[in-house]
Length: 153
Image (cartoon, rainbow, N blue to C red):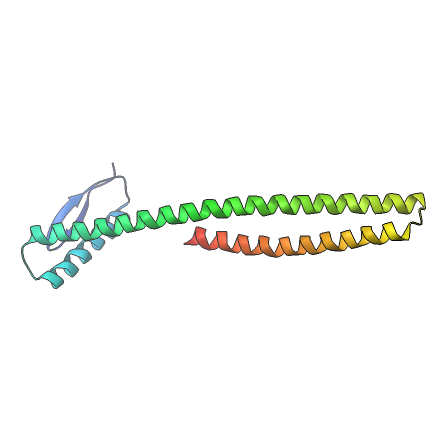
């Protein structure tokens, strides 16, 4: 338990202690005080008890809205992680295919084979894989950007 912190909420002074720092306790108390003053402006001065209850309901509503938003973001983040894993697999497969194709081309070259048609087919495949790798790089950049936005959200 930390030191006791004197705070003023809706005209009353309270001595609060907890695991939070003095600054954190004061910030929380200021928030509650602001909420109570806002509620009292809207409903008039119907007594501290009514203002406190309505302020608590207001704060609880915000809390549950935030919980729902966090759950929505968690689900969206999981989907992005699944999408990322899928694209990473495609990326790895494309790199593997590209490497295998390059190795096959080198083998043909070293063996001195002059099969122009086959060589051209392999070149076409390399170009196709290079295009796939480029496309996957672009999608990977977009996914990273979306993940960063969600994590900052």
